[in-house]
Amino acid sequence: MPDKVVIFDTTLRDGEQTPGASLNVDEKLQIARQLELLNVDVIEAGFPFSSKGDFEAVKAVAREIRGTQVAALCRANFKDIDAAWEAVKEATAPRIHTFISTSDIHLKYQLKKTREEVLEQAVAAVSHAAKYCANVEFSAMDAGRSDLDYVVKVFTAVIDAGATTVNFPDTVGYTIPHEFGAKIKYLVENIPNIHKAVISVHCHNDLGLAVANTLAAIVNGARQAECTINGIGERAGNASLEEIVMALATRKDLFDYYTEIVTQYIYPASRLVSKLTGVLVQPNKAIVGANAFAHESGIHQDGVLKEASTYEIMTPTAVGIKKSSLPLGKLSGRHAFQKKLQEMGFYLNEDELNRVFVRFKDLADRKKTVFDEDLTSLVETEVIYKSVPEHFKLLELVVLSGNTVKPSANVKMEIGGVVQGPYSTFGDGPIDATYRAITHLAESKCTLLKFAVSSITGGTDALGEVSVRLEEDGHVVTGQGVDPDVVTASARAFVNGLNRLHFLKEGGPRKGKPEEL
Image 1 (cartoon, one colour):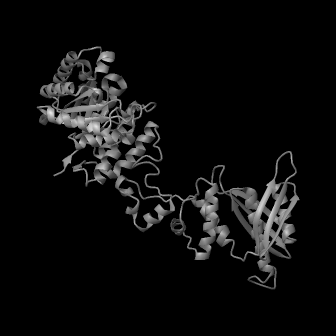
Image 2 (image 1 turned 90 degrees about the horizontal axis):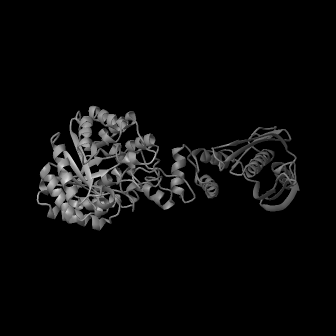
């Protein structure tokens, strides 16, 4: 039978130590409710003695949350412990969590105490806490840099005094996974009464190893993991709850352990914590980051569309995300591009798809994000509005403009299969100069009746959509063009209009009378 790993969530205590992440009572309650839905085993609600506000917050959580243990942190002194009990005593399953440093560097410079004095204080604190409740946790702060034999001695004594959980924190994130795992194994093998208590670990992420250290500890005998939502916390943060839980769930071939976390609530919990603390989740954050289930590479997109497991080791729905995303960019392939268009309601034939895909690739090279609106506009201009033969094709366009030069345009076109130009001319502005050059090469006598430009999406790299209305010999047509460069979009719209005029003059849909197309 696999062993259970107790999930001790300290988002409301250590997580709140993230700079700028202070939470009020109502916000702590909102997160606590979400943690209860997540089914964590223990919620460390705060440090009651640290402030009146934290005392009230812990008390409120203890009163309301009924489905999980609620812990209160306190230093190894009677006043702290008394405050912790007062705050947490109304919980259905209260826990007192007391701590003191055990590393020589902390004893010398912070506590200014001897090992014997710290041992005596630890035992006295646990004995005092045990008078209030049977659920007492003791933490040896900076255990990762402490002498192991001394930690063995302290843990043995506090277990005899009533501690039911002994926590071995890597307080400064100093240890390496194989080293940390070996330390836990040493504790298991050398603490004579360890069968009376659960070994817990609390790892910080200063070297980016908090989750790896936690997993190494579990393999070597730890059965409680202290962690936070999104890995927030002091300095570089704590071990991430979502990463620990999903590593155990995903790699059952290596980990014969389980948690009782309802994983479908992981993503909602992540979003809530980020919103209330103001600590944003980095896009490439494992499990809950915006890119965690996003595939942009064409090869990856093709694989996921054929079989999700080709590039996804877990399903997005398992952590509460509706589905994977296939963001379209310069690395995207035709398969994902076609799938996206079909989801938007565009079913193109092979020739149409090829034409739009070429324009998409050109756009993706120049634009960070290609939005749905961009794709709609591309389809409209390349397929819907371009439903006539291309007698005129824009090959090259170079414009010069500014407040100290006369605007000019240099244009090369293909007309009826023959390359014409380049031809240069001046105008009142870059678009006027462009239209003069195109008109000259096309030998057109059309009149521009209307010119309109709009932005498809927000941002400075947004697609510009240009619509023109042209008239010649009684024929009135509308031309459309899109491009991140408004002048280029204007040229595309004008050429599109010229093609529609040519189509009508050469025998369009209702030959013999002026048309509007």
